[in-house]
Image 1 (tube, rainbow, N blue to C red):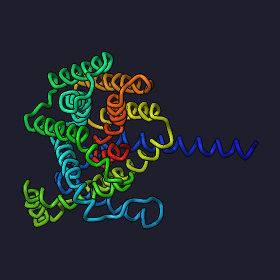
Image 2: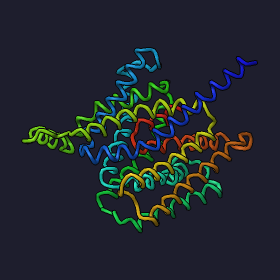
Image 3: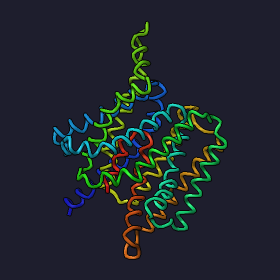
Image 4: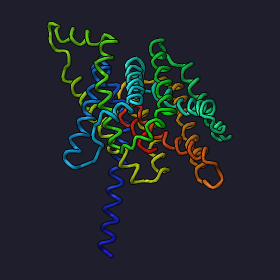
Length: 351
């Protein structure tokens, strides 16, 4: 009896540790990346370092026997390449959005993705129209977003151009790419490994296209030679480490707790992100803007409840609805793609 009680207690603390670890990584990652891109104003190089850390981390942990990932083969890489390109574009636009706007603006636009996904699913994939509760939640999300944009004192054409570009790329990834990679047969860490390794290979192309390589070389050749000070190095290192940690804690927490508990954790993470961003500096929205931001999060909560509720009665829905609901339930984990796309690979892994 005592042995059973000990095992139960041990499992409880292990599960709690995973949930707390995921919550901390998820809530801090967007803020850490904002600090990193503020201290180190080279988005292409920053994301490349994150890709390198994640791909190398998975490879090393695989060699040490802590996890298993699919080996890299040219045949699978060719099939995975379209998904990796969209993934790279999503993270590229994500990082530039954080570069030109605050974390609150990022969360608002990230919260808009269920609205676009629902429209795309209904229009292009011929999925059933959303239920009344789902439709109401989408309107709440839209209302909060419109209110935020209308009162955003930090509005700039550059920032919102990147915001709309990010919205388009992340929606495309959620609607199409996750279905494209379903049949590749890769395991969870295989998706992480391929996504980050292929993205790392693409990074030099974007350095040349954007001209960032010239800025980096100019900074390195500058008289001071101090193109990355200690604070920038710390912020960049932290963003790379947290990018890998959120993969581990996200996957582990999803396996350890129920889908409902995971969804609740994701919602709490958003509120924590907003609270942390408000407390640490002045790079955040106005009070009314924060109210609108919280309204979009509430709309997201109702949206998750509506699609989860639809999934509770599988015998009363057709296969198409089932497939749509499964895809939407995965959206909460996608929300953490907010900060760095490493966790965005998990949406592919579940299907």
